Image 1: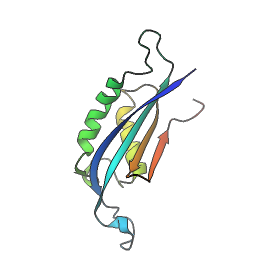
Image 2: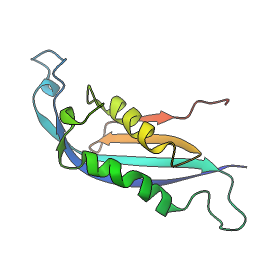
Image 3: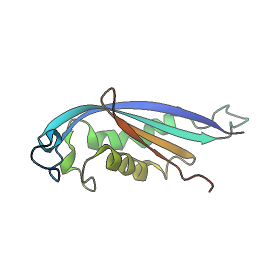
Length: 123
């Protein structure tokens, strides 16, 4: 049996999607209050009672948040275009080595919109 645990993080950032037509509102510079949920799945360790220590998730996310919080996402190396889909993949690549069992990264662009990247099924 596997259990999935998660931790949420928040950051503020701006971006513009310059590849969209000028008439699209996201072509203009704008900002979001982002929320990121990091999920790790696995068996509960008998000794610790954890799937993963939340402190390990916090350590993995600390440099990610430093790179993103109060930044212009278009200037973050390797993050282009700065859509929530690319942002989820960018975060995944930076934390997966530190978090065996990483199962999902959700990126919310405010209260109602976002995306989720999940581990491939059937591995």
